[in-house]
Image (cartoon, rainbow, N blue to C red; front, side):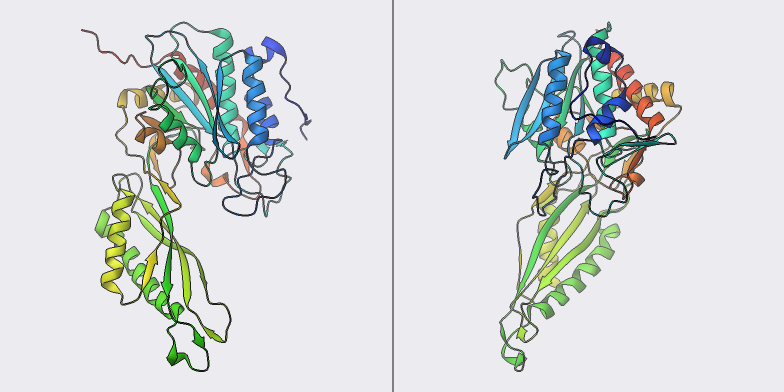
Length: 416
């Protein structure tokens, strides 16, 4: 059946929040375009998170919980809400990003949520508005029921995850730069759960990524007399051969992580020359390097530049990276991870600690001092697809797990 769309959020007082259905919330979120152009053209109302931000402000306002809007860049904002139960209790942060990938090539209407055979279809259903809806429903239930023994809970909805994770990095920095009187930003939470489609498993480690451009330089001349110039494309061919060799050596150079596999290197784009009758003076490639837990991006770049200087005899320039995201090491507090797995098993049956080849906001929070893992409904196999969908049953199970996890936190102080 086709779900009825609503142009405005439908919040029906306390009744809505005490019995908040993640499916109802997700239907509303899918209907709000929040496309991240990911470096491309961004003309039109479907781009960026402004509509999502407005929806979240209204949600938290009507729920009656304190919230803060952090402007990250050019009107793109994080929205953070907070529930305080006990100053001596630990603080758990639930986090999900507001943006989605572009909708080009989709075979379904991206912003028309459709429920069919136990699945909800639409852009962001899986990555990651489904996880956000489950967290928001759990957060609303905590706010209305206020169960005894609950952790203090922060609900963070960040911007720009799909391209450069600027929202998560901004939030992590704010933990260490806030004024003491700021109740939202007194320091890192005790534990953070990041929503991504994990099939209800717990990602405890994942790769990082660094992306940058490399240019080769030549000397332009008429193509009828190529010996009078130097082809930047020929020079780039030598660089590419060296990079292909380097990529093949990475498992031996760095090792194979038991959860995340070996690091990788890929060339995703090449541009060179201006006309077929001109020997090209410049050629440029874009490089994607996935790092293993424990690797540092500055060391990665230094090592690769030294390798190319040794293996080639061409003039090249490595430009500063435009994306750097840390890997997530599997060294988070095991008490929190085990408690989360216990709650997942009680709701969904046994699940596992796993690794991921992609990167998430969790690494930004871990680097800022908050032990972090990734857990959420949906499968990564459906993320970014032409007919993106999520299983409604997983959506509801994740919501219940988030709620139960917050109501039975780890005791962070060891008794004397």
